[in-house]
Amino acid sequence: MNFYNSLVKWYLVNKRDLPWRNTTNPYFIWLSEIMLQQTRVAQGTPYFLSFTTAFPTVFDLAKADEEQVLKLWQGLGYYSRARNLHKTAQYIAFDLNGVFPDNYNDLLNLKGVGEYTAAAIASFSYNEIVPVVDGNVFRVLSRYFDIETDIALASAKKEFAALAFELMPKDDPATFNQAIMEFGALQCVPRNPDCTVCVFNDSCLALKKNKVALLPVKLKKLKVTKRYFNYIVATDENENTIINKRTAKGIWHNLYEFPLIETEKEVDFDFIAPQIQDAFFDNNKVVSIMEDNEISIVHKLSHQHLYIKFWKVAVYGSLEGGINQETLKSFPFPIVIHNFIEKA
Image (cartoon, rainbow, N blue to C red; front, side):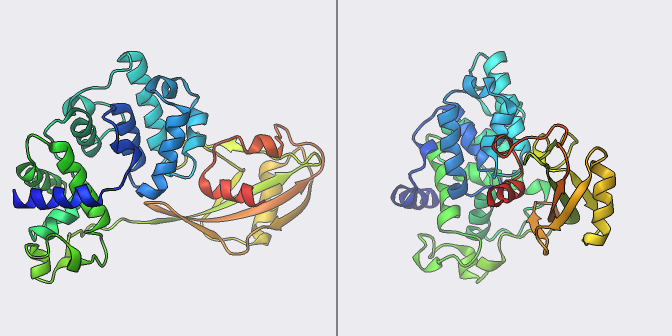
């Protein structure tokens, strides 16, 4: 009880005024939780406001075109979240008549909703007694109780959820869940937390044992693959260009990009020039090829590092399927390509 009292007292003084905290509407809470997966609050908040303005109800989101959803999502990354969001909105709107499941187990059946998100919606919207366990919760509990369990293990979530459930007041699970996540986000941060001002500095075992920097334990490391992308940015005599939709499974599914040559390593002009003519421009003679960025742009994803070069290619005649610059900007792109277009 002392842990809970201290935590909630801190929360009520220090909590941020976030738009999804002022409602129990499951649609808004679901939106915020999906957006904040792998995303900082400061980055996610403008997207939340844009989405709730464009799609004030789950019916509005369900009726939207997928490309409109992806365009609004542009820059948040992990685009499968947006596609799942759209499909789930359609299921809730058209199959469930706009009514969200009102309990943890049923929420788990929604596409794109995992244990953490289901717990968040269930507790924040319906006050169900179910703990949330995210990175913040792992960190706070592992430090306070000096738990050395490797949080990369599948069994760790059950262990920490059981502990959180014990600590949680059964009459107000929502406030507890909000408070412990906020404490991890603002006070018990991953690196160099200021323990001198912490409300738990007289009871935190990690602080007493000088182990704050060592917890939580996470031993499993991601294997990162390097990929080399060469984008062909063509311009014809009408100042039109061409783009393609990525329809294959994998990164950036259903987003758009310029014609792509993927190579096994970084390549130079002598390598890429003959491939450009052979691969893309049977009906147009290439006038010039210019390397836009001599040093590759490194775009880091969770399991992949992309080394990206843009090659500007001028051609004679008109490109089949060519589009102008204004139309180009209406399509959803990966943020690295969007930034290139804005700069160009």
